[in-house]
Length: 72
Image (tube, rainbow, N blue to C red; front, side, top):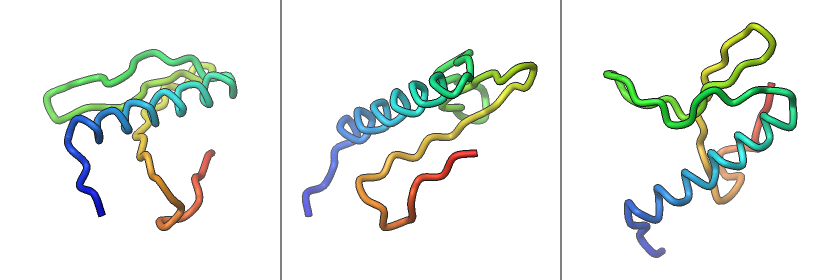
C-alpha cells in the first residue's frame, strides 16, 4: 500500500471539508468559519442553524471500513 504524504493527506482533508460545507449549506446551515485555529487546536467547520452555533469535525474516508457516513 502506498504511503500518503502529509501534503496529500491535507488535500484529501480539505476536499472532505469542502464536501461537508457544501452539504451543510444545502441543508440550510450557514457556514460561519472554516479551519478555525485556537490555542487547543482547530475546528474544521463552524456553522449556524437558526440561532444555534454548531461545531463540526470532518473525517474524510476512502471507504466504508469504519461504517457509513452519518448526519444529524
